[in-house]
Amino acid sequence: MAITRGKMRKQIEKAPSSKKKTKRKIPAKYLAGLSPAEKAKRKKEIQRNAKKSSKDPSAYVFPSDYTSSGARRKTKESKYTKAYRKKFGGKKS
Image (cartoon, rainbow, N blue to C red; front, side, top):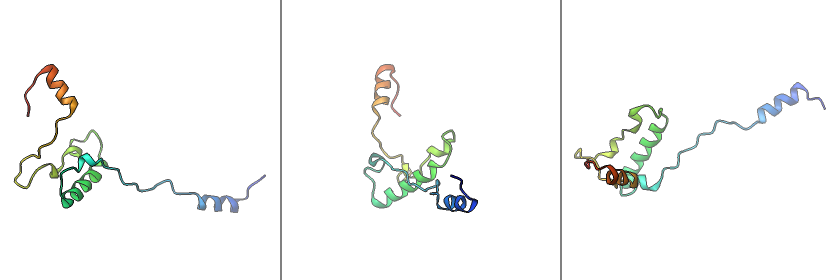
């Protein structure tokens, strides 16, 4: 069965758009212990930095990682970091 140019044009126009904007799902542990305003700020930073290349060091810098006094926020050490320090030693920073 042959398809005419007119029918083909209609099919192309009806085709769903492949470019959809989807928001990234951010794990709850990234937002744990933050106020609602700080959570919104952190989400915005993550969304903005997600567009950057993984090789770009500025993609991993978040102003919300610091308190208003300029001190770094306390975070839980990962199990991998704990295992490494147990095996090889090293100072806690």
